[in-house]
Length: 546
Image (tube, rainbow, N blue to C red; front, side):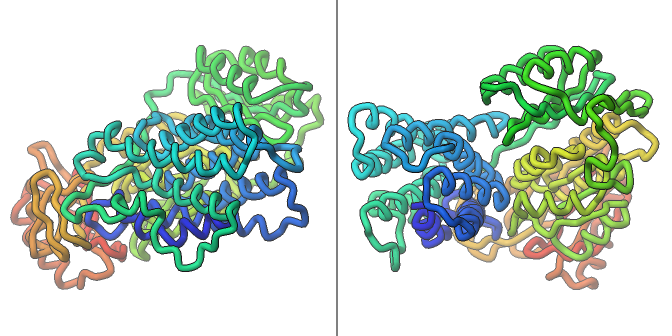
């Protein structure tokens, strides 16, 4: 079922990609979900057993490692919860299958900071709820799958009523459509139907696959930056071994309790242990709640105001050799595409670069490996793209042997501003606050081209038009790259603006960039201009205004 679900999505990933994009060359929901599924399938190849517990666990493990983009991360959480529901089982009844779907939906909702209805979450929940109701009456797994498809299609059709932006674009949610492709693969596997040569998700969804070219909209979940940190102590510990019977509910209760008197709370239940991270003014109180669930190991309390760390739990026999050796206190990982951008981040003391961005989101595993290469006790990660923030946060949860702090930068200029704001001698949490504040103060623009005819906010767009995007939204449409760039800057530059930083892409000759420099300097004499070769693909210019 999982293999056929991956195959069905792979056949239809282009159609899913086309559902949720601006007319710019970076639509990748279907691609990200397909790559996540392929990673799950790859993990299945190493199995020597076919019991459902092992298969579900392997799929969850592979999806977690290969998760790309927000849609891939959410999909990996659906598999994670599904695996938890089948743990220890050799076979699954219809009731087992349905309850596991429900656990997956629960996991996915919790993974999103601000869940929105009308998305893949809505479709996953509707399928799970319908399956639970069906399985309470019938135990026929072959009859359960058609019910899942029926409920999922109905939920998918409702997504435009729940998200106005979908209704305006005349489409259903792309992530939900991708999930239905997977579930249709499940159904075909159970019924013994071949997937070869399948070119549409289903006749009932074909109308959504062929959306009107004039209606397109980008759907993206925004990550809100954390507020100012006012707590003086960073407390981290592993709770292991756990007391008998400790469950996800206990971990959730601990998280809720810690949030009552602290912030930056992270409580992650994994196989046999819980990782806890909390900022508070009473680290002893944090540890007293933790010890109720088991023994404490690898306890660390850091006085963030003085940057003096105190390692606790010597009585547990803890010493530096118990964890992989770290070579330095602080390291940096950044995501970007283009040799020039990579060189710039390296100049700004970034240790490890992850290749990726608009057209290819790196996987969770890519980010994990980059952080591990840093060999730093604390690592700042700059995703530099709104669709990579969740994967970076998931990587941080997986790395339990070090502190990983994600600065939720959504653009390359935000990432550059964040790195410039870093002060080497300042405490970690003060730097995190500085970097987030600097990123939030940047207005980001970009110039690219249209890949299809469409319309947006009353603007008629034709294939190959040049598009100027202000904070990710189409603001200027034209025929000339330089003219569109200038028009976009006129919209973004304010009276108090002082600095324009511009990165020209791989398709922009240096002489063209220099000609544009002269025009910008003439148009905005009050602003200092920095122009650099970014080498990024598909985007002629990326720039910031500060």
